[in-house]
Image (cartoon, rainbow, N blue to C red; front, side, top):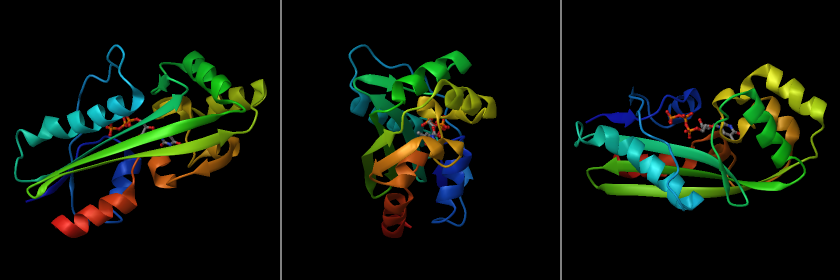
Length: 184
Ligand SMILES: Cc1cn([C@H]2C[C@H](O)[C@@H](COP(=O)(O)OP(=O)(O)OP(=O)(O)O)O2)c(=O)[nH]c1=O
């Protein structure tokens, strides 16, 4: 039996390695389109499950972990920006307001499924045009939901968070570790 992380994210790999010594990485290739009328919570939970399900078919005896993170402002789901203009648009909207970061982790094991979804409130300071343009030049936004990374230069935008920091980064390692202690 192996542990498989269904992810291409270097952050998820680094965080899982704090809890599990040996695991395989098999990125899941799924369609991440939001369905018509789909609520953010349902969306992020479906994505985490689908990433894991992709691999479960071939590896039913293994522990498979799928995870998804999305930024939500009001009812708008902000995934990864398509380009720099899209990133600018997202950061302009996130300026001087509170958004939610939703992260769902889906862990399939022989003992059953463990799924948890965290919602973290994040408050941003007002961002000036120059702040956003300088940030976009760093390219840090490119692979991140909501076009920022709290673990990098995006930290400068953050006034306050309420909830699990590691869920913002994309992987609720404390919870995953609790599950690993039960199933490994
Ligand atoms: C808000 C925020 C998001 N992110 C990241 C976490 C996720 O990796 C990414 C959201 O995209 P996801 O689709 O959740 O994940 P991914 O495409 O990076 O990896 P996978 O192969 O597992 O699907 O945004 C940060 O790293 N820091 C932040 O502050």
